[in-house]
Length: 218
Image (cartoon, rainbow, N blue to C red; front, side, top):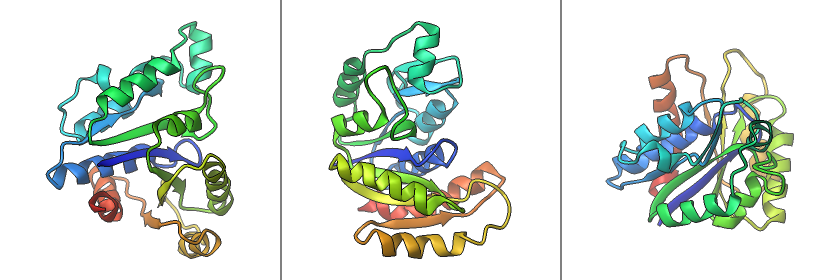
């Protein structure tokens, strides 16, 4: 089976880009991946992007179960909008719908609340999928990736890879050193990237696909 749970060290680090690239690569390998963005706040742009990268075989309701208007953590948005979503219901939906090949993208980082009792890491733990951790290719990522890997280890969750993404334009002296230092500090963890910055969406996706191609193949 080819299944992944994609999470990030923070919001805006490139999770959706990496998830879409994984789906596109799985699709190009002759598989029929299923895309899931079970929780999304502030619209359904990410879910729709993933749906299309997976071949547009699913309807949006299958891809995204819990949608909120406010661009906030899902748990916060659900409380403000007085629309609680059952964690158990989302879990059952994913377990039933994933099939043999799937990419599930979380919301924000591991400890982002999904409701009053559960966070993104709880969903990853419930599904027991190999985790792809996406981090920013820039200053601070050694700390952020390290903290996220510590939480994944504490929960005994398997890590498929760490993928670094340069999500903003400009020169950052740390970028050329981060992969080497992450590999040194976390032996046994596969570190991919960085995906370079590209302003054009198609070039950005193509660059991400090159980085995750090996992961999609096995």
